[in-house]
Image (cartoon, rainbow, N blue to C red):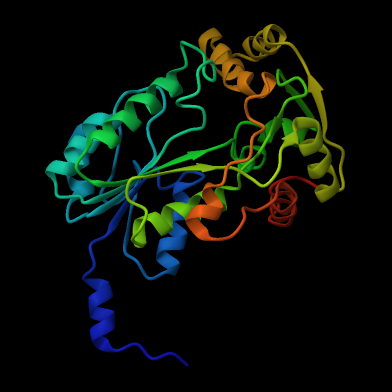
Length: 293
């Protein structure tokens, strides 16, 4: 049995909370859980949080930042709000910040010229690098959880992934690894000024990903490569706005162009061990009931 002195408990209770924006999302929710498991006070930054945090309502920012010294920033895609938020963090006494950015930010031709998410990350990184805080930037590859919690979930459940990815491969990163790096950078020293490029240990094509999920679930999931034009047309026919459908197709473009297959060493550098494999993710997601068997 481990005994904790009353002084130790009091010290924990008096610690400044860590604000996690996007605290209910794929990486943020995991950061919240890991911090709480470490006994760290957490403030969940979301519209349903206490106090509420809304990226689009700057009147909510100050209450969310009250007594906060460390922040995990998950930007609001499509808007250039990271810069003013970082400035407010400085004014409110925050001293450490971990920014979730994206792969390919400084790679010519990676994102389309009209990529809303790309503009968000480019300006956000520039703002963070210029600030006075201890900062760490995370640049993850595609989340493996996009198959179980995000973009591809409905397609996986239907049994058919129709994407304009051709035969390109991706070093999918497990959100658990992203969160673990974020928590380490938030709670330990030695990560200030670091940019961690995060990926899984190997490149996986969409067809291979579908086959791995099929094996994990015992049901067939197949990949059907289609052209960007047909992909956009299908989404519009399903009720998507034209611009949103085009943005989705553009986001898949780097896979098709072979720009997402490289392995990055950020997980190893930050945590001292290799990242999880896609097959591990698929088995865990199947066991958790993410997909019908």
